[in-house]
Structures are given as structure tokens and as C-alpha cells.
Amino acid sequence: MPYNRREFHMMKTTEKKINFKAAFSLVEMMIVVVILGLLFSLVVPAFKNNVDKTKYETSIMNLKSVAKALEQYYLQQGKYPVFKNWSEVCSEKSPLLKYISKVPQTDGWGRPYRIKSSEEQYELSGQASPNPKHKVEFPAYKITTDLHFSKEG
Image (cartoon, rainbow, N blue to C red):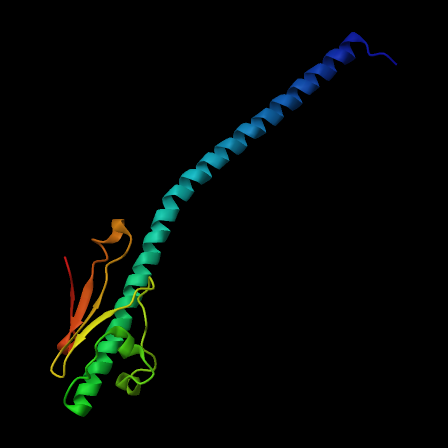
């Protein structure tokens, strides 16, 4: 059955409304995507900064626990244990295992700590954040005899 002019005009008008509505939805979706992109660009750097901060603080806490074990060893033995490198500190034969359940092998970024020790003194050190943007905020650090903590820079 053929359409009369009025019905045909109404159908065209309805189609235009539908097309306009569909186009409007696409614009809305594009706006939402842009807003999400902007939010994401703000959140990701803050999240990465928090991850670096957590790794840095955990690394310092781990090194402080080793320093406390060194001090406990000194109180019982009257001298500090001598280590040539960090792998000796972490070994199964380490005299520190009597004072600490586990010696951390690496910092939060997977890098070994450093140690200089003699029977009279020690120096434990950790590296700065590997992220160039955070080297100032999370600098290299060290703990020396009698638990003296300092940051470089």
C-alpha cells in the first residue's frame, strides 16, 4: 500500500530525529572518552609516584632492620661482623640471621644494597629512585654505625 504525502513526510521527520539522536549519542560518547582520558592522565602519574614512594620507604625500612641486627650483634659480640659485599650479608651463613629472620637481598627496584664494614663500624647504603623525575624526592641514603640515618643531596 503506497504512502500518502503526509505519512511519507512523517516517516522522514522521524528518521531525521532518530539520526540526530544517534549522532548526539556519539558526541556524548566522545566527550566521555575525552574526560576519561584527562582523568587518566592525572591519576596515572600520581599512582606511579605513590608506587615509587612505597618502594623507597620499604627499602629504607629493610635497611634499618639490617642495621638493628648489626647493633644487636655488636651488643653480644663486642664487635661488628665483617662483610665484603651484600651477598655475604644475605647468605645462609650470615651471623645476622640470629637477629633478623630474613635479610633482604635487594631494594624495592631489585637492586642490591651496599655495605662497608669492619669490626668497629659499618655503612649500609641504598640507591636513589631509578626514575629521573624522583631522584630529588627519593635520593640515595645510608645508615652508619649506631643507626645514624642520612639522605644524600
